[in-house]
Amino acid sequence: MHGTTHQEELGLFQTIEERHSVRKYEAGYEMPEEDLTAILEAAAMAPSSWNLQHWRFLVIDDQKKKEELLPIAYNQKQIVDSSVTIAVLGDLEANKEADAVYGAAVENGFMTEQIKDTLVGQINQAYEGDTPFPRDEAVLNASLAAMQLMLAAKAKGYDTCPMGGFNRDAFVKSFNVPDRFTPVMLLTVGKAAMPAHRSARKPLEEVTIRNSF
Image 1 (spheres, one colour):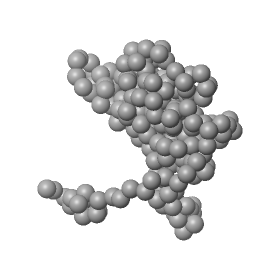
Image 2 (image 1 turned 30 degrees about the vertical axis):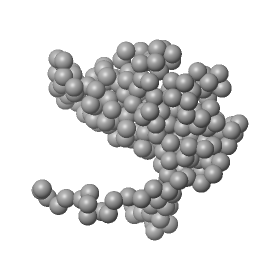
Image 3 (image 1 turned 60 degrees about the vertical axis):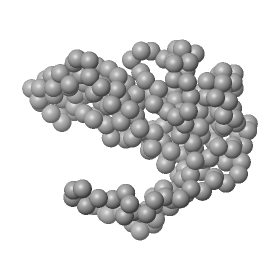
Image 4 (image 1 turned 180 degrees about the vertical axis):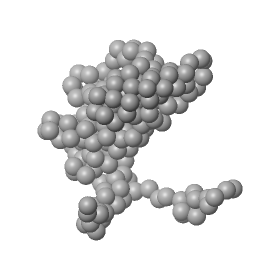
C-alpha cells in the first residue's frame, strides 16, 4: 500500500488554499454535465453520522428557475450568472434511511442482521421526541458534503460561493421542497469572471486550544 505522494498532498493543500468565495461569474458558461456529476459524486463521499447521508442536492441550472430564485436570494446576481446553483438540503428524517443503509451492509457481509437491528433501533430512538437533534444532524452532515463539494469544484477548475442569505420559507415554497428536508445553504458554481476578493484569517493561536480551556 502506497502512502500519499508529496505531489498529491501539495495538490490538496493548494486546492484548499486557492478556494475563495467568488461572487462574479462568467455569465452563460455551461458546465459540462460530466464535471457537475464528478463534483456531486465527490460531495456525496463525505462522512455522515451513522452513514445516513443526510444531504440532498437540488441542482438549479434552468435559467427561468434561476430568475425565480434571484429575488428569494435577495437579488444577488451570482444566482443568475453562475453556471449552476446547488441548494444543499439536510434530511430531518434521516433515520428512515437506516434500514436501507444497514440492509446493504448486511448483504455485503459488513455486519450481522443482529447488529443491524440494534443500530437501527438506536438511530430511531435518537430521532424520537421533539428535540433539536434531527435538525442539528441535518445541518451538520449536509455541511460536510457542502465543503467537500466546494473543494471538488475548485479541483475541477470552478469557483463557488456558499450562501446563507436567502429566504428559506420562500425557497421551500417556490421549489416544492418536502417537509422532510431543510435548506442548509445555496452554493453557486461556475467560472470566475474576476479573481475572488481575498480575505484574511485569524492567527492559528487565536482559534486553537490544546486539551482544555
